[in-house]
Image (cartoon, rainbow, N blue to C red; front, side):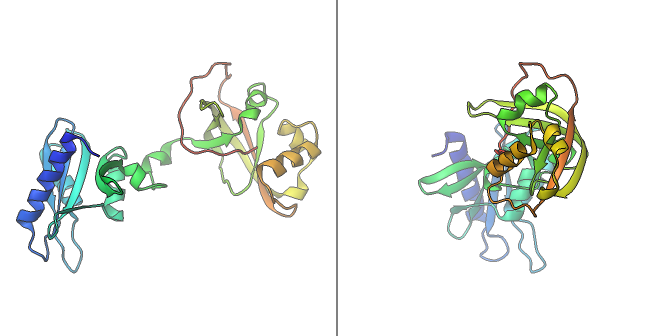
Length: 255
């Protein structure tokens, strides 16, 4: 179910699609809704060498007429039938690059619904994230040891990191999410069997046996010959007892 504003947007796109449909080069129309309530239309231009989709055309018209007015939603309609259609993969990425929060009107099992671009394109390439600190997800049970300095290392499997700024992220069972600013100081590849008592101590464990027990908990089936990364880090500043929670989506339990 969609709201009144989106119903009007669908009507505008449907009218445009039916009026401009030629059953050949122009079969898909799109309409986008801006923050101020303006409707901007677009039309595909098919060609055997390729051509813009209706959504891309609407984005171009938006850029030409009201670029200062953010886009809230978009819908595409197939002219020959008048049916709402979902954006193609290319359009999803372009819309995601414009704003992952843009709502796309699509047809679900119970009729028309609005889904954000980020929902339609999970695991999308996000150029914005390229300049953000890498996120190191930590089990909440290690927070105290990291705060008091007894844990300055984490062992990772198939979870690559690199030296540089980072955020240690603790996703708690309560739903609270805590982040601590940190810096990854080194990443050293080794085999599990070559881990030492010194590694265990740097990881906040009393013994190498305790470290291996934790590895078995976090990585069931990890063999002694398997490669692991020894990731060393330091906190960027003193972490107090009551940091502000931050919300992140991913969930991992790693040591």
